[in-house]
Length: 166
Image (cartoon, rainbow, N blue to C red; front, side, top):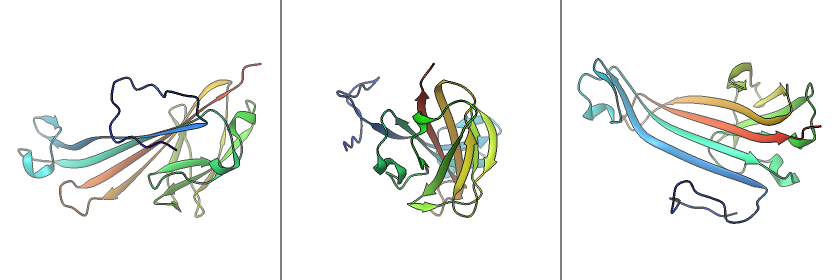
């Protein structure tokens, strides 16, 4: 496992083959005002209407191992409970959505940009894969911001993998 605080170049290229890559990014605080949306904390914006801090993560799985059936981070994360690349179109992928290492209930999960369901009490959901090739599964979670710099914190998670084309 390799952790980088800030990639040395853009676009960053992983120097060797890996089974999974997880990336967390944040564009900072945002505040909606009557004059548009600004990349500022609530206290620094003129006439704030709504403010948020956003964190976005992407997990790409290229090679399955049993360790990947557990969360790798404390971020909002979707964890396949079995090898997603072994699926075929029409079959269901069993996922667990977690935040801070614990299952999260009530998270809307989307497949190819369309909401497909909400996680249960155990953080689990089944998503039917619909096609071969590149897969995009997304989830988001909103929490109040205790710091007072924003109204809320928005966490977004993306899970990507590929189904072999026959």
